[in-house]
Image (cartoon, rainbow, N blue to C red; front, side, top):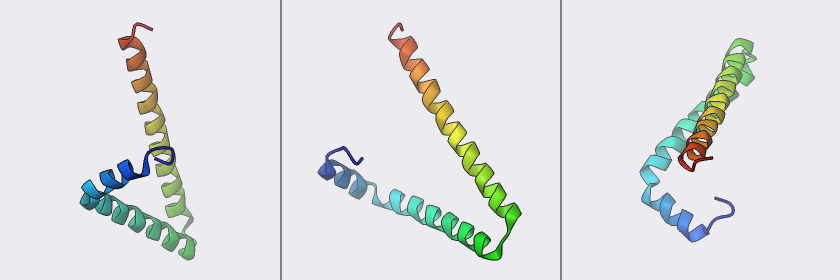
Length: 77
């Protein structure tokens, strides 16, 4: 987004405002949970959050790798 046309992204955001708002609300709620866990000093909940973040990162990396492999095979590479 940062390198793209701002007016284009503005229009995309506005066209998808309800969906974006739901996702932002969910993300903010998750961050509030982490803050509460930090304040409470709850090591097991923090560790589960970190493990979940690691698993999400791994899924994202695998999805990108799968997509790149698919594109390579499509183009005969």
